[in-house]
Length: 389
Ligand SMILES: C[S@@+](CC[C@H](N)C(=O)[O-])C[C@H]1O[C@@H](n2cnc3c(N)ncnc32)[C@H](O)[C@@H]1O
Image 1 (cartoon, rainbow, N blue to C red):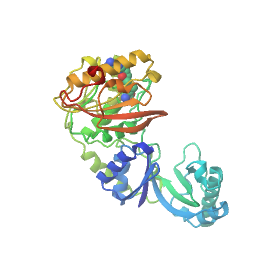
Image 2: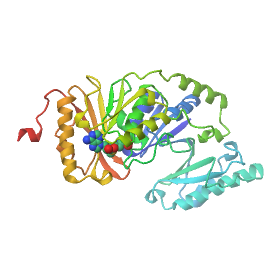
Image 3: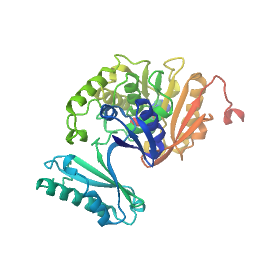
Image 4: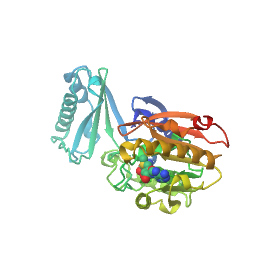
């Protein structure tokens, strides 16, 4: 099968790491997407295991589409009635922005493909599937670019960032897929002691705990939630075997401690509740307290955190500057021998941390441009600008 996994452009390196390590072949990075090949067993496995993909598409065909008429006649050549049942409602989605539409508006692309599909069913079975915009079982994706249209089926259904554990109420939670990408970019592989001292709703630590016990993030999805389950090609037996195999790969205990803390007890309780819903709470340790007073949970490990920033957390600029300087001091004084990955808003005074990153990634946290700073914390490694003064 030719497949496409989509993701934000900035986290594509993390998705590439995942696809390579899970055994996908013929991997070709694209814009906000990675194309690859997989057999049926790996196809099911990837739906359960990919941590950083937003959705998975199965390529049906790429057709020439220089005009609406050409798209219509080309899409009519596809045997849609062999792909899904006419009783299942469907929709067509157009991917890409207007500039990529090659003169055809997204609405026009959708209409041409939708009517072609209905024509094919009418001809083959005398009955077209209904269009269902609220709960479609089948989502056909049309991606028009440079006069060609890639037609695919969305096989993941509900976006893969929806793991089903998120508690509402924190003002600045990370998306689950972004948290997983941050962990992979930081080099976390589930074997290092992990600490998020400003865990908020707990996303980074919960994703880390899942990795520490080798738990697939989508293993608890309910029957029918993956859209491949509604396709004629669905192999129920292989799917069951794959689910059992992936479930059996989960470890009984984390390979190293996973610790989460926050200054706000309400957020710690929220993180704990989410961890319970993600069924990883028993593999984690939670504390309430200031990072400045925290003790490292191990001699060495990986500290990953997302610093508060005025915009969404409601602190003043002066407070933030002081906090960032204290974060830097705490890292230097107490976490020598650790590595750290710190997510900060690009517009924040992150230089006040006073540590030179080994590497930086530009990421987007929703609409906020951010930087992920990867730091190696050696004993007495670097004089900070403040110490140098
Ligand atoms: C940007 S949020 C973290 C969001 C989190 N990554 C998530 O996915 O929900 C920053 C968190 O730092 C916490 N915080 C602020 N100052 C702190 C301090 N000195 N020590 C520990 N936690 C602190 C806040 O309570 C807030 O929950």
